[in-house]
Image (cartoon, rainbow, N blue to C red):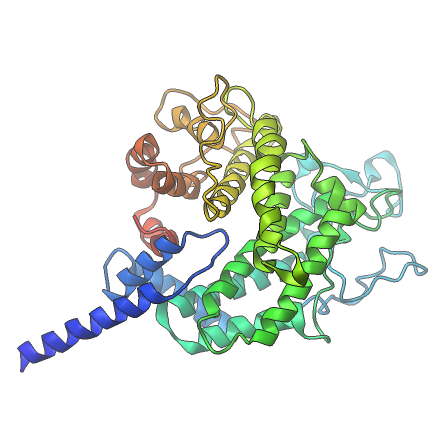
Length: 431
């Protein structure tokens, strides 16, 4: 009897693996083969993924107890910072510019133009008055539910992901208008009172939403009608990114530090999702963008001849911004690889160090003990193993060699073992 049970179990496992490999994934900034491997390990109950799966389920269960969020949930008096004659639609995304404060030190009133005081850090009090927190929660909810569905096949998670997607992007009563015109506005500022181009960075994680849709498509919850409406939203969003004054400033050729990189992530993943929408082959646009724009306007411009992110290193939080840029470049490289375009190694054979590979390797001496981090406010914002954990986790997978060696010798062993075991990359990019 035990032998028979074992044979049946093996047959079921073989059938499950066959069905698994037959699933067609079309994620945007994740690696499909790595996802399939993660799912396979879950099905095998491989110890390497159990802690991460448990944590994922715990977060998903917590989110299930909470309601969906949307942009119409602005608090009372949210529009007091805009002139009465300038009506702002409650469906418009509105957020406060992160480093701005009233210039009271110079005796100015609260209604004088606010000023950039990055040295004071984020103005969290003002940030919490508007849509940024809800937008971040929305992305986290959708992404968590979708991954929980993919790895467990618990339909509750797929239903929850789709519900939050519809509330934020589709349902007329609660949907966000497809723009960020009022992103990171500066109170009473002559130029940025009605939004700043740099506010678009707050959509830097929207690519995770598209990955989530790819994961829930295999459920019966996400309908063709939902997909069509999401395409229309993304079409209008990408048009705004390309044609609005703020969008053009944010995505300008050669410039804009980390903002330019994440603008590219937003635009290219939107185009990838659109496919052949409205009779236009957006994927041709994506490939052309990866081949011609990203290499010159981002990689060669943002990275200096030594491999560092010269626009970020003078900033107080240099370590965070350096790693933020590298993370964005990795997202672009993963997306480009889906079209057999190698951004990881573009220009890596040149005499200078202006390539994604070299920029990641620029970090190595700070981890193997050959250099000390002295950039920005390094006492308050040091470069830690945690800073580059995800960056080197991914590069060790895609580039191997010394990247894997640095990760295995100097990063992984210095991370709290519980934290490392529960990290979702054990599922998304299993080692």
